[in-house]
Length: 126
Image (tube, rainbow, N blue to C red; front, side):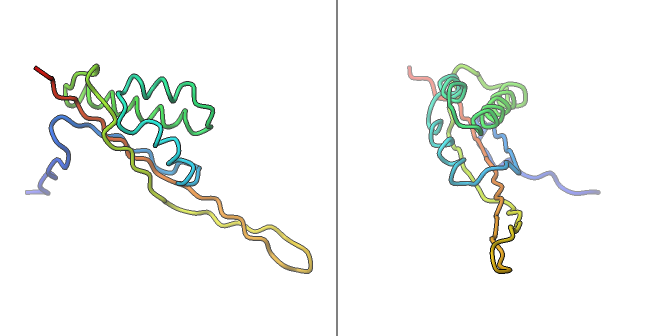
């Protein structure tokens, strides 16, 4: 008895890694995700290594995790992987307030975001 296993939503030549609750707004994270979309994984890792954005280190970790998932869980060739999808989403927003003049309040929002990276194995050209 028990619950049936969920069907795999990705193709056999794909692997995924997800980072949730990254302390950065989705707009800023999307700038870094745009850097690596469609590039080969080794090129994307090099771009993230030398990026001056603070979140680039976290995005690099997620990409390395997706590469490791592809290699260990799905037996894909690491040299032929490229970043097929890099989607950014909005998660929670922490709301704070800052006292202002004449008894008023200044609202401070601290947004969080999530990142989903899908790496795919390139087909061989014969």
